[in-house]
Each structure stands twice: as C-alpha cells, then as structure tokens.
Length: 407
Image 1 (cartoon, helix red, strand yellow):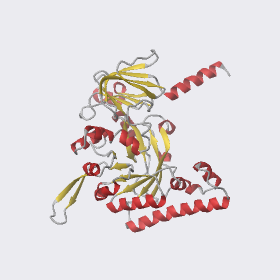
Image 2 (tube, rainbow, N blue to C red):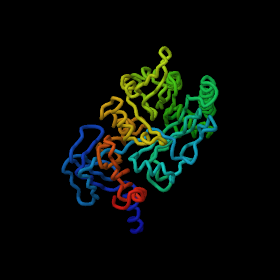
Image 3 (cartoon, rainbow, N blue to C red):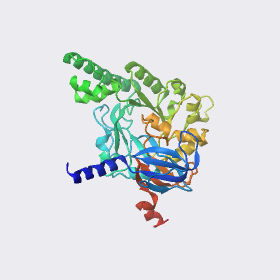
Image 4 (cartoon, one colour):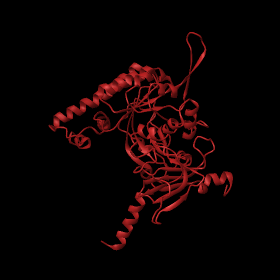
C-alpha cells in the first residue's frame, strides 16, 4: 500500500478516536464516587484512561489547565424534540419514520446545547402522535447529521396522550397497530418457513417484512425500547399493561399529572424521565384550595430513580444545571440531583455503560466549568466530546459579540 495513503489513514483513525488530553488540577466531580480536590483526568483514544492526582503523560497529550475550575461529566439531555426542521405531529401512526430525517445541524439548539454543556442528546418524536417513529442519540457538534449521530437505535416513541378524541379510542388505535405488526411478523415467518435465529436484523430480512412494519417488529422483538409518554395515572397503568402484554423494553416519559401512579413503579426498575416542571398544581376537590405536588420527592418516596429534561422556551428550565439545582430545592441531595442530569440520565437512555460519569473506560464527554454546577454562576469553559475539544468559551463567537473579546 502507498505510504502516503497509510499515513492519511492513520491520521483519520487517530482523529476518529479523539485526542489525548490531560485535564489538570481541577476539582473533579465524577458523579459516581467521591469528589476530588485538585485532581487530573487523563483521556486517551476518546475514552477516560485515569482519574486521580499527579497523573502524567508521555508528552503527546494536550493539556487543559483546570486549576480553580470544576471538572465533571457532560450533561445528558434524556428527552427532547428540539433540533429538527419540523416534527411529525400530523400523522398519528408513523412507526416507519425516524427523527434523523428531520435533524438540522444548523439549528441554534445544538449550538446552545454545546454552550450549556448538554453533550449527549436523546432526540425523540413529539407526543401529539400515537406511534411517532424512532429517535436517535446525538452529540451537539458537527457540520452534517452524520457528525452528530451517536446511535440510531434510541427506540420507538409511543404516546398515550391523545391530541384529540378520547383515551379509549387512542389506546385502541395503538393496540391495533401493535397487533397488526405482531401478526404480520408471525405470518411472514410462517410463510418463509424460517425459524428465528436470534439475530433480529437477519430475521426481519429473512421474513421479508413490510418495511413500514420493521421498526415496530424490532420493538416487539426487544431490539429497541419503547418510549411511552404518559399524562395521567391511568396512562401509567396502561403503559405497564402494554409492557407486560407485548413484552416491551420500555422507558416512561412522565408528565406531572401522573403523580398518583408513582407507587405503581416501585420495584419495576424501569427507566423514568420526568417532564421539565417539577411541581404539579391542582385544586383539592374538598377544600377548593390549590395543592402543590412535589414530583421529585414523590418519585424518591416510591424508590424510583429518574432523569429530567428541559423546557427550551423557559428562561431557567432550559438548562440542565438549573434543573439539577431545582431538584436540590425540591429536597433531593446534591448527589441525587447531579445524577438525574448525568449518570441516571445516561442509564435512562440506555447508555449508562458509556456516559454519565468520569470512570475509567467511559467516553470522554467532559466539562470544565468556571464554578460549581449548582452555584448558578458556572459557565462552560471547555467542552470535550469523545476526547475532542468541541467547545472553548474563549473562542465562542456569540459570547464575544455580546461581551467583547477577552471577557
């Protein structure tokens, strides 16, 4: 092989794996394990190689001076429908589409995510559908969609929240679609004479399934999870029935009105993502007085770990650091609050083995902050994604425009 070609391939491979980086001297908040004062984080080939004090390199790693700064894992945005040029909210049953077709990397949303430290994004269809299609996991850095994509197997979005009509009719349409896909899959398997091999992709090809039903078949076969949006306690009950009946791997996206069903989730070990509003206000039917339900405390009482999401239109709730601070105000511990936007959020979207904490072997998605993340004064100084420096506050053109160069 041509030596120049070999050199080029080596450079490309090294770039794909990320840089070697030594983040030196910061306060390290690993989000799993004890916090460390003035410690180092060593990154090689896009992954965390070591966390501790006095780490050294052979000189090939670039050094990020984090003295006087805070080092922590990137925030994980566990559910959003932002970042697309348009969402599917008109056709109620569309299991065959993917949000990937609507992702627009030029959207300010991705730039804001990078600036705000939201380094992993679960982008899912909206909730004004019955079956909204499949979602993806993205990073907020890149010029084209392929640069942003981390996984196209995030799961299938189901919604039990009717945009019109009644819940019984809505649920009947959902069940009809699931039953149709299941029967179609069984019929095609019988016609082909093939037996299930255990390799879902191979089986779906061998059975010659209708393309429009393949993603539902993958969900029914357990290859991808179902993300089920619930707005009432009855929705949660129905979601659990669907999970049991169709043997689904599921994640629940819960609105505030579901709080009475939280005890049903005790011991289920099912990933839960809480809506951006942590208080649910309702009128007591006996006294007529307004009652405020503390949703994080109710979930904690039920023994349910959960992730939280954001509200891009809200001044405060658009930031995951703000959401974590709000969880502390709601009565959670500092560790529980940070977990809801890092390690527990990574678990909720199925990437807990790779993201959400500063542990050896995990993806090097790392933030260097100017202050404690719950202080309300922290800026993202440096953002590292997969070992690559993806953001530097000193080079942010928007901030330079607002505050002036060097400020």
